Length: 77
Length: 252
Image (cartoon, rainbow over all chains, first blue to last red; front, top):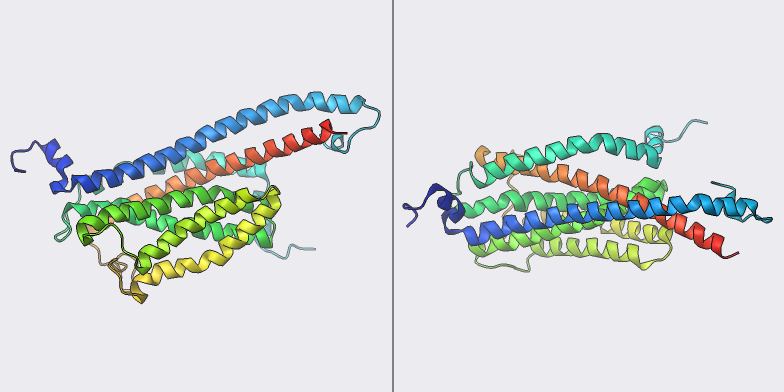
């Protein structure tokens, strides 16, 4: 049975244990790559959020500087 | 007055997020290179250029993804406990960030160890799961990572959440020797240690090679993920601080 298989088929056949070996490697690949992609997407998203907030910050600071009674937060830029 | 901690200088320099970002930017390309290179070589040797086991046949190849996952699960927990300790005792802000960043990575590696172990168990033991000491203690480790994440999300106050989670991580460190020695202390289907033994490794070099290469690949990937998630955690905290400052400014 295994003798007339092409070398590639022979490789994927894994001596008949392909239903165990490929799912094991597959789950490892999916979860590790998934964790990496999830982390990169979350990092990108929160960096955009930070940029948006930092772009808003100078306007707020200008306003508190001109207000007669400055809030406690305008001491530190 | 001199610092009471001789290594305090280095660690305090690291506590500065800007310095951490610079160090991590320098480390990142090397870690990515090691990750890609070792996964390439490890998969080649593990799936193709290594012999089959005389008893387990081809299923022995599951070892090359299973055993490093279990090592990394324990390494992640050590990282969690050490960063918890440093965060509690020295109030090191980056240690708290490192703990928060490690927990999801540790949970994934522990899940992979359990899942690939179950797939390996079916053809070799004839069962997916047994409630023996090794498997049960690793399952508990998985729940401890989840518990750590849950505690961090349970408090509105970040500092309190960090302290509670750090305390759990430190107390839970007893699980590590239990996992390590469970195969010697109790009867189990799981095979005993064959790589790290006092008498030297009992594994064939042709199988040890892919195993160690994959372990280095996993460790380098752990480094990549840890640095990325620490950057994420730092950015999130900065966003939160700015949002609180804005909310404070909006209500006079």
